[in-house]
Image 1: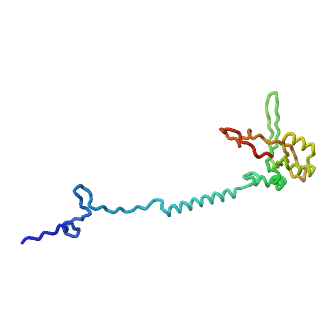
Image 2: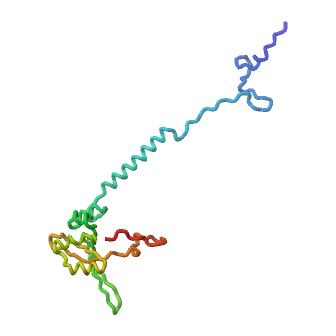
Image 3: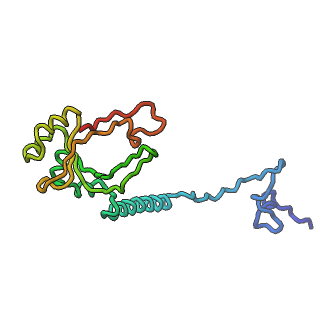
Length: 200
């Protein structure tokens, strides 16, 4: 008795004995008859990691601001303009009518034979520079005479002082440094010197 042949589809069924999975069946040109779906790989920088990086960045900025705001300010460490303003004589008057300053006192000795220059040890103390239109403050307190004001004005200078105005301050007629000689303003390689718009 002859055995009935199996249908054509059953020959390649995975359930049939000796059958092959059609997913592994290669066509006549060696290509697979059915493409397997690729499993999606998660991105390295997903939303969670981006959120963590942003939080760390913001935290670093906050820590930096906290350290800078709590910097030690003392006479040995002048770290801010506010400290100089508070140390100036008559600080409220100085900030309103002038600018606080650091005054350096030293002496220079020049010998001609032999030619040498000797500098004394400088001393630093707080001071104040008044604007030219506020000289009346010194005149009202009779700290400068009209002759001193006239001589200082003729040389296009201004007044600076150290010590409180109420207790015999040391007042001098001072001149402003030319901007062309200020190496903090004119960096090397600049085309033209910066114009000074802070004249007192």
